Image 1 (tube, rainbow, N blue to C red):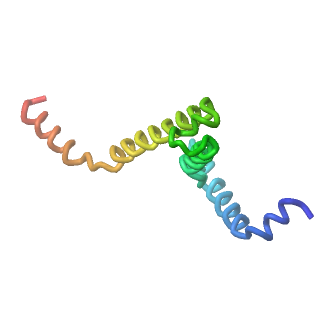
Image 2 (image 1 turned 90 degrees about the vertical axis):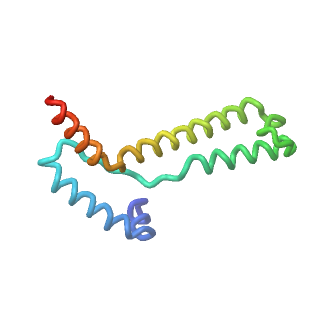
Image 3 (image 1 turned 180 degrees about the horizontal axis):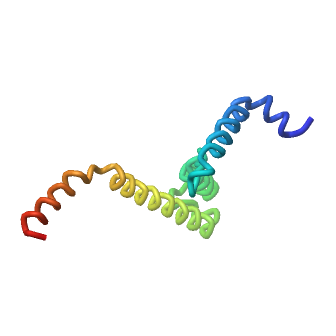
Length: 118
């Protein structure tokens, strides 16, 4: 019994998803320059927060981010968590710009340019 066969029995949706994805790639591959396949992954912040909590508990629960147990490791995890939070803020700003309706601005800009004779 191969691992692939075992996985197919446990997760039949994977066979359906694989077929659908392969079909789309084949349909668009000839005419598209790029194809994007995204994955659903766990939020790294959840795991980092848990790890930080474990370090804090191991340090006696003094609330200093685990400094009693392993200061360097706790500081590293805290830095990773901060980087993830910063990344999320950046993504949020990018998504706002992507979703914003710039059409009224463009129309007014064109009117102003036309009005000034440019």
